[in-house]
Length: 250
Image 1 (cartoon, one colour):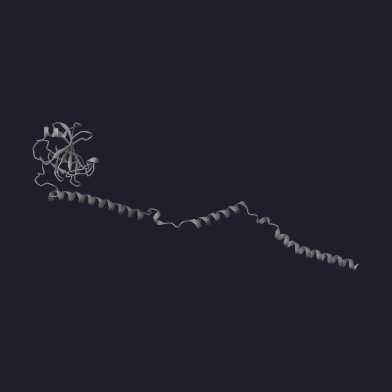
Image 2: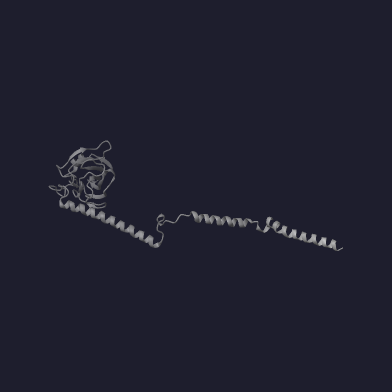
């Protein structure tokens, strides 16, 4: 009876030993259900990966790639622009003053010329008599007469009136003055083109008298030689300037 009990005990001990050794290994190879990632966990992992990638590839911010946005920077920019505008206006005023000074000091060809056109009528010649000759008249799209004269020769208002336009550049006319007048009850517009830069003596809106000095002969705009381009329009119609002057100047 003792031998059978001993055998049973021995087999039991051996079985227990085998179970103890096998169970940890089995447990290690079986995946745990709790370790399976959820959809939310996967999303969180992906999101983190995106953040890291963004940080790794982001270029450093360069201040030179964006404009001023703070109130202080905006005010500074406005002040700089205002200063530049004032400087430009001062330079323009200086140029006009220099031109006027040059005229009075003899830089322009005023020697032997009166500063007011001779005559007493409503219409005067726009250049001193004997100082010019005609190189081109109306025709082929040319609306006036080209009166050749030395650079700096005085230009006079052919008729009194109000200055319609006065600018350093008016299309192909270059430096130009335009005057609206009434002569003998008719509306007359005269145009004076190609003056010297800075030589205009009248401004838009100014009233001028017949024969008043308005500028000096030059070669600005669409021009190849010193001359006055002179146009005459009466009641909206273009007239031949030389004939008009011959009939009305005095």
